[in-house]
Image (cartoon, rainbow, N blue to C red; front, side, top):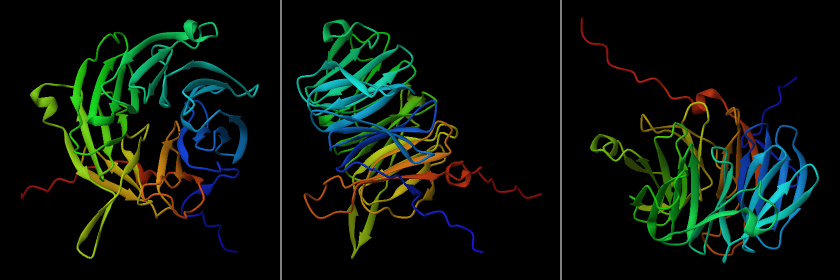
Amino acid sequence: MTAAVAPVAGRELSNPPSDGISNLRFSNHSDHLLVSSWDKTVRLYDASANVLRGEFMHGGAVLDCCFHDDSSGFSAGADNTVRRLVFNYGKEDILGRHDAPVRCVEYSYTIGQVITGSWDKTLKCWDPRGASGQEHTLVGTYSQPERVYSISLVGHRLVVATAGRHVNVYDLRNMSQPEQRRESSLKYQTRCVRCYPNGTGFALSSVEGRVAMEFFDLSEAGQSKKYAFKCHRKSEAGRDIVYPVNSIAFHPIYGTFATGGCDGYVNVWDGNNKKRLYQYSKYPTSIAALSFSRDGRLLAVASSYTFEEGDKPHEPDSIFVRSVNEVEVKPKPKVYPTPPA
């Protein structure tokens, strides 16, 4: 009898979205996976059981989603709305609105607020415990230098990446102005920003096959640690072909991170030792989003064409959930040469 071979890409989830996948996120409490899509839905899966647990229709494409807890979550829509989704009852309500599509949504466990970023060049904070109606839930509106493309939280820190390569760092306890105003150290448009789990800085990816590793500490010693590296590229006939890096996901245990690019590859990196640890076999199309489960045992991969080459025939949008082997994500100890006796 031959042993069952696990599919190389991971297990494909049934009932995937019917259009581009904008994001996917694992819960902090279980193996539930929340997925937002251009097909106007947010879907809730049990990733371990491969079961679709719920589906929420929106008024337009859904550009982002996040969990509140295992019974509810939030979504950001191209119809300018921020919605609260209650899974057990299959119901939703509108938490508030922006003046343009809402690109990003995060829930801060530290301050108990929902934070949204929009193409209307504002960031908004909402209190989901407020009475229904925008005037009861809106805590504050904060102008940004440009359209918001990506946001990330760690502890009291919030990092906001916008068009025009601006990066603002806030302390959630005092949102009146950014703690730091920066410019991306990458020359091209920012695609994704993600904070390090240890709270010391953030990784930023661009459309031009690069990732920058940044640190909050503004001292000379702190800033001397920052660097950038090339990735998601290939050489063909002496030419460098460069792909956007759409997604960054940190491993919750080891602090290593995965990147997903329009080349269909997922790479795993050890940022401290500046090494690539692993490259998974190529996926059918662009990697639109990545997420590790809370214990780092699973990696969800959205293989979904992101239209970087315009409208063309492409592979169907799909979600793969792969079991993560420790060797793929654990930093390798540095080997020092043995001094001569």
